[in-house]
Amino acid sequence: MNTTTYGLDIAKTVFQLYWVEPSGKCFNRRFSRPKLIEFLAQREPGRIALEACGSAHWWARQLEGLGHEPVLLHAKYVRPFVQTNKTDAADAKAIWTAAQQPGMPVVAAKTEPQQCVLGLHALRQLRVKMRTMLVNQLRGMLFEFGIQVQPGLRRGLQEIVQRMDELEQSVPPLLFEFVREQLQSIERLDEEIARLEQRIDAWGRQSRSCRTILAIPGVGMLTATAMVATIGDVHTFKSGRQLAAYLGLVPKQTGTGGKVWLGGISKRGAPYLRTLLVHGARVVLSHLRRKNQPSWSLTLAQRRPTNVAAVALANKTARTVWALLAHERTYDRDYVSVRPA
Image (tube, rainbow, N blue to C red; front, top):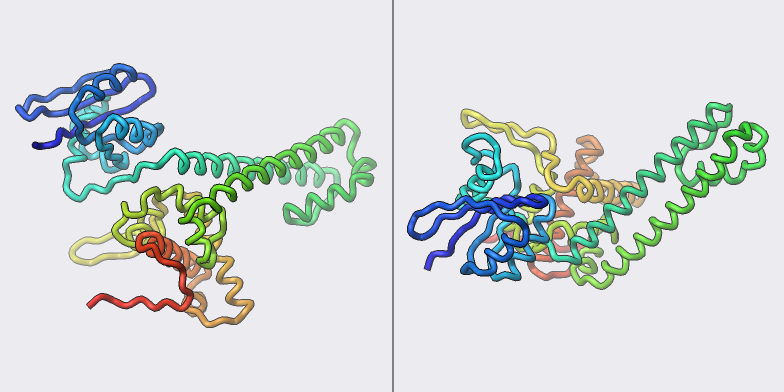
C-alpha cells in the first residue's frame, strides 16, 4: 500500500494542508490548530512534509505521536517549487512537490532536550552580547571625561572597580550614580551567564555523545553541547563531509563549461556553532605554535592565512565529530584513516 504524502504549511493560527488521494483527486484545505490535529489523528499514517521553520520541531514530535512520519525540509529547497504567487495554498503544494523529489535533503527533527539546550545557548549568547555592550558603553562614557581604561573585558572592569574613588572625583555626580548601577548590571549578567553555563555543563556531562567528542582538541563543553543539540540525529548525514557542508565550513562552488571555481566558505547552517568551531580551532593552532608541535594545520598556516588554516581545522573537527558519533568510537589522537579498497 502506498503511503500518502502531505504538504503542510504551518503558521501561528492558520494551517494549509495539501495531499493527493490514491484515486488521483487533489485536496488543498485550510485548518485551525485543533482541527488539524483532529483531522490528522483520524487519517492513516503517512509522510507529512513541512518547512523547518519556527515551531517545526514541535510539530514534528506531535505528528510522530499521531503515527505519521514527519519530513522537515529547508525553506530554500521549497521556494523553487512555488509555481504561482506565494500564498498558503501554493506553499503547501510546493512543500508536497519538494518532498517527492529523489535525494531531497531533510532536516533531522530535534528532541525536546536538544531544543532546551539550544534555548540555553541562545539565552547565554544574548547575555554575553549585552555584557559586552554595557562594558563598551561604560568605557566610552569614561573616556569622554578623560579616563582611559585598559583594553579587555575582565581587566577593564577590574580597573574600573579599583579606581572608583578616583572616578567619583572625575565624573560628575549626575552620571556617577548610573556608572555604579551599570557595574551592578554587569555583575548580575555575569551571575546569569554562570548559571546558564552550569545548566549546559550539567546536561553535557549526562550526554554520552557530548562526553565522546569532548576528547577532540578544540572542543569544549559549549561546543560539544551545541554540536549535539544542533545536528540532532547524526545518521541524517551520510558522511563527515556532508556535516561540514551543513555547517558552512566548505568552499562555495561556481562552475560552468566543465570548469569549477572554489570561493570562500559557504557560511550555511548555524552561525553560532560555526563560530564555536572556528574559535576552538584558533586555540588549537595557538597551542601548537607555543609547543612547536609538528602538525598539518601548522604546515598549512605557514603557506596560507591563519584564518584559512583555522577554518580548515574546524572542518576537520566537524568530520571527526561525525566519525566518532556515527561509528560509536572513541577519539584516538594517533588514528590514521585508511581509504577503502
